[in-house]
Image (cartoon, rainbow, N blue to C red; front, side, top):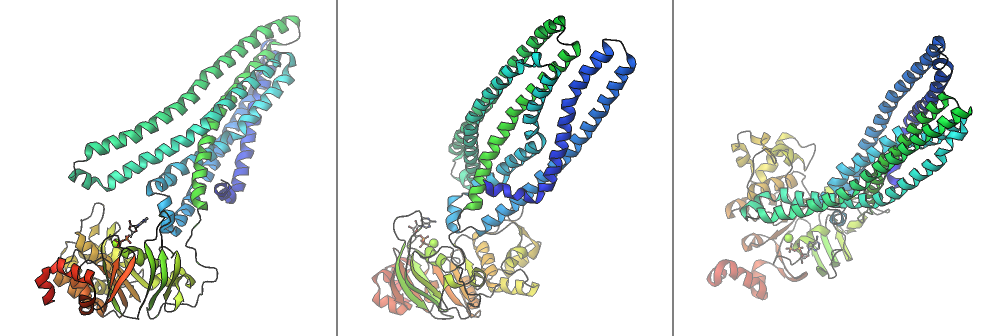
Length: 576
Ligand SMILES: Nc1ncnc2c1ncn2[C@@H]1O[C@H](COP(=O)(O)OP(=O)(O)O)[C@@H](O)[C@H]1O
Ligand SMILES: [Mg+2]
C-alpha cells in the first residue's frame, strides 16, 4: 500500500498548504459559537446594539475568511488529486507494459481495467476527502469539546457521554464496512470480466444464439454486485438515524440542564447557545467520520489492488549481467535440451528439444494443434523463459541479451493477428516507428496486401478496427506480416500466419520473404507451405519427432506421410 501513496510525494507542499487552509477553516468554526455566546450575553440580553454590531462584524469577517480558505483548499485538494491520478495511471500503464505473459495470465484484462478506472478513482476520492476533512473531523470533535468546556464546563460534561458513545459506534460500523467494500470491488471485477468477454465476443454470441445464456451469466454477476453493494450501503445508512437520535437527545439535555444552571446563576444564556452550537458541529464532524471511513475503507481496498499490480514480480527481467554489446546479426537459432512448462501446468509442453537452425535457413514446423508449436515460438523472443535448457541466438543465451536488442531483431507474427484501431498505415508502421512511406508500401507489397489496400476507398488511410472497415482474416494476417517485415528482422517467425491465404498468394509471399535474407521459422498446417522450406520440423506432443526435407521425411517418417496423405490422398501424396 505504501507503494501507492509514495506517488503523493511531489505534492507534499501542496498538501501542507491545503491542510494549513483547512486548519484556518477549523479555527473559524471553533471560534464562531464562542463569539455567538458573547454576542448574546453582552449584546442581545442587554439590548446593546453597538456590541451586537461589533461581534456581528467579527463573525461575518471570520465567516468570509473561512469561506475563502475553503475554496482555496478545495482548489489545491483537487489539484493534488488529479495530478496523483495522472501519475499513478501512468505508472500502472508502464508496469503493465512490462508484464510478462505469465503476469498477464494472473491479471485478466477486466481486472486491470477496473484497477485503471474504478480503483484509481476510489483512491482519488480518499485523498480528496483526506485533504478536505480527514484531519478536520477529529480536530473539530476535539476542539469543539475543549471549547465547550471553556465556555461552561458543567453543561459540557454531557459531551463526555455522547462523544465516546458515537465514536465507538462508528468504529464498529467501519470495521464491518471495510471488509464489505473489499468484496464489492471483487464483484465489480466479475461484472467487468463478464461484460468484457461478452463485448469482445458479441458476434460469436449472436451466431451461436447464446444471448440468453450470456444474459443470465451477466445477471448472476450483476446480482452479486448489487447484493454486496446493498449490504455495505445499508450498514452505513443505519448508522445515520442512530447518530441523529443520540445528537437530538443530547441537545434536549443541554437545553434542560442549561436552563437549570442559568436559573442557579452558574451559566448565562449565551453559554447554552454556544454549547448547543458546539454540540451540533461536533456531531456533524462525527457523522462526517461515516463518509470519511467509508471513503478510506474503499481507498484501502483499492490501494491494495493497485499495489499488487505495481509490486507484481516480473519474472522475465533483463539479467543484471545482460551484455549491451550482444546483437543478433546472423540469426542462428539453437535450442539445447529445452523443456518448457506453463506456470499453471504440471507437465512440460515441450520436452528436451535440441536443434540448430543455420542463419537464413527456412524452417517449416508442422504438427497437430497442441503439439507445442506456438510455445516453442514464444521462447525465442522471450515471451516466456525456458524451464530447463537454453535457447541460443548467434551463440548467446537469449537471457543474456538486452531485451531491446533481442526483440528488435525478431519479426513475430502471432497466430491470431491483432490490429489496432487506426489506419492501415499506422498499423504497418507499428513495426518500425520511423518507417518511410516507401518502406511501408514495400512491406505491404512483399506481404501481398498492397493491391488490396490500394483498392480500398481511402487506401493506406483506411481506418480499421472500431468504426473502421473490417478486414478479412487473410487480409489481417497479411497486414500483420507487413508489420513484421518492415523491421527487416534477422529472424522472422510466422505462427500459422498464412493459413487463410490461397496457394498462389502464399507462394508469392514466401518468394518475397526469401529476398529478406532472414532466418525464417514458419508454423504451418499445410504440406505445400512446408515443402518450400529448407527443412521441416515435425512436432508431436512437445517433442521434435523428425527433421528433414520433404522427400526425406516422405521416406523416413510415418507420421509425415500420414499428414501428406490426409491432405492430398494416397495418390496425390505419391505425385508430390
Ligand atoms: N498460456 C497457456 N497456459 C497454459 N497452457 C497452455 C498455454 N498455452 C498453451 N498451452 C498448452 O500447451 C500445449 C501446447 O500448446 P501450443 O504451443 O499452443 O500448441 P500449438 O501451437 O502446436 O497448437 C497445449 O496443450 C496447450 O493447451
Ligand atoms: Mg499454435
